[in-house]
Amino acid sequence: MFGGLLASAIANMEGVRGKSSWRWIFILEGLATIVIGFAAYFLVADFPADAKWLTEEERDWVMTRTRSEERLEQSVNGKAIIRFFSDGRNILAGIMYFSFAYFAPTIVRTLHYSPVQTQLHTVPPTAAALALCLIMAYLSDRTGLRFPFVGFGLGLVIAGLAILLEVHNFFPAQYAGLCLVAMGAFSAGPIIVCWYVMSLEGHVNRSIGTAWQISFGNIGGIVATFTFLAKDAPEYHTGYSIIMAFVCLGALTTAIYTAILWRDTRRLRTGDLDKGQHPRRLL
Image (cartoon, rainbow, N blue to C red; front, side):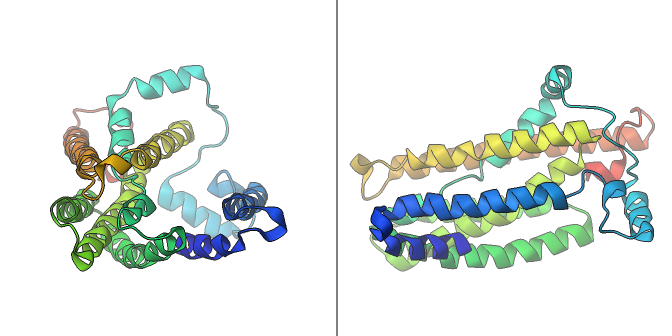
């Protein structure tokens, strides 16, 4: 939401100190990222037991709640990475998140707005997505369920893409379709990341898993920028069809991932599976 507003404001800096506006976007947003990353190195603790900004009582409560007593006794190495990718569930998790990593400004640009207007028109869809994201995160936490909310998000994305595929030259409907896509993608995406990380055991697997899922998933944004070609204007049937295919692939991998976790949870509770994971982590 704030990215669109910030980008539209920076776009007005064209020619400031002899630099193009796109250069200022890289300079200002990159500088903010570097400063925050530097501060995070000192402020973010590796484990609850190392969080100096927590009291002793608070650290004990967090460690009891998460059943975490691990330290940096194990490190990420080549063997750990090979072992990680030998588990098919981790491949599925990357594909699940990949299906949500589309590029909203690319879709808005197909409605023929200027660069500044394009960024401004991404704000309402992402604002609606933020509201839905908070609601779904709360309900998912309260119910202890992930799949139903991911499925709901997938449904919104598919409905929005269907509108964009079939409706042309009618801005209100097209913009409503974009809002549905944004609401579904941006609300289900964080739940997928949380769901996956919670299913991993140990800081080594969580470190590799988080990096793998987010880095691979964000490749979808790169793909999206090259799917809406000028020769396909104004319907962009090819671009929307490719994104729809990715979302359907995501729905399939989500269903498979859920079935695997359901099977493992059932086997764990009946004693047919070694207790390498706690059932709560598989929900």
